[in-house]
Image (cartoon, rainbow, N blue to C red; front, side, top):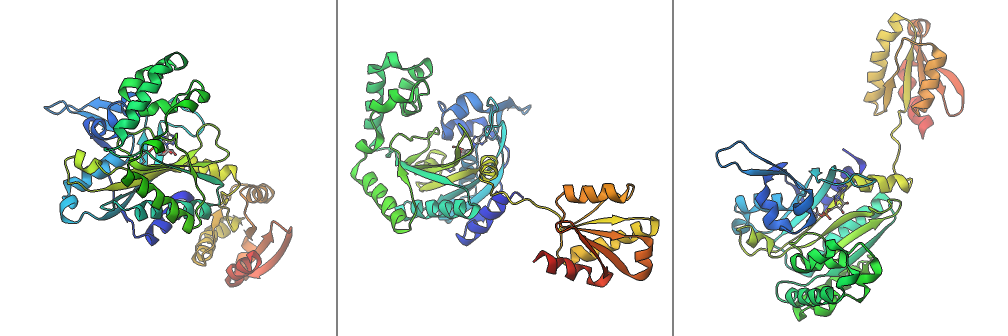
Amino acid sequence: MSLVEERARAIFDRYSIKEIRIPVLERAQLYQRSSGETSDVVEKQMYTFTDRDEGETVVAIRPEGTPGVVRAYVEAGLDRTDPEQRLFYSGPMFRRERPQKGRYRQFYQFGVEVFGRPDAACDAELLIMIDELCRNLKVPFTMEINSIGDQKCRPAFREALVKWGRAHWDELDEDCHNRIDRNPLRLLDCKRDAKVTESAPNSLDYLCDECRAHFDTVKELLTAAGVQYVVNPRMVRGLDYYTRTAFEVMAGGLGAQSTVVAGGRYDGLVETMGGAAVAGIGFAIGVDRMALALEAAGALPAITPDAAIISMGATATHHAVVVARALRGANLNIEVLSPERKVKTLLARASKIGARFAVIIGDDELARGVLQLRDLKQSTQREVAEAEAARAIVEARG
Ligand code: HAM
């Protein structure tokens, strides 16, 4: 498990979020109905194939986790029997992409989905949790939030975008011409020239009173919790199911692919997928990108052995296994080096793998029940009784 996943799990535990395992293969239809027919994920990036079953079902290799979790939630009847659920999942996702730094065809997400909580406090709680995780990982980050309204107020915003798109036709590229009718919200992601969208309508101006009050409460709660955020009224997210709060967390050192966490509320999705009218909200951490961000920030702790074991002679080599086991039993990280080489070569190897100590066992040491303990950092060496070795290493390590 990566450091990112380990820390995320520990934090999710404290927020009472339980694990759900979802399949890698689902019907392609599931994503068409939820992520959206016109989303890039479905339109361009989904890997699909036709199953050899009677109905020749078109199957997709999951491009994201949210639809699968919603399907499982509805299929288990939780929307009716026990709607309030806090779930997390982790695993590989697949999207047809042109691979580059931070953008892969197979990447890992660690996601959370919370059902049955329409209140703004839930949005704030998840954002506070993300803030806590990023701080814990010591990665420099910026959190951007927005509200994109709901079924009631979004149509007016959409309409304003369509109108704006038509008026700015010549400044938009072909990709965006297609978006005008098919997915006008995505006009705000026009790539040709970021300046073009400066004059575009922004979602916050179109919020109905309920959506505005919801967003105001989220902001108040974040401020009260000391979470730093920026309101970005141009952020719309690329998946169709979002309503109200949308958010993205950006980290430094990643170049163009800087979004390490992204998500939002999706209050109508459970119903669209055949369930009851239950609210939903969630996010996914891009584990690969987060790891790159940690590396760039120098916050990725190297896992190095406390000691490397070097043995000389057949009997000592046999005994090295016993010594390694005893040292590991004392919670030390031990690597046994290949006995087939010269001591000098092996000492160089021990330094290369970052071992703090080399434990050297020869037949002579073995006969006397001792070991040579070489401190590779301080270039000192002393003889210790075998039974004392673990304590000596732990003490020196501090
Ligand atoms: P998404 O924005 O498509 O949202 O992906 C979430 C995160 O996954 C991105 O911010 C990024 O860190 C990572 N990611 C996406 N594509 C790639 C890629 N090709 N290579 C590496 N990392 C990538 C979702 O998937 C939603 N299901 C999130 C969500 C959960 N919303 C509500 N609940």
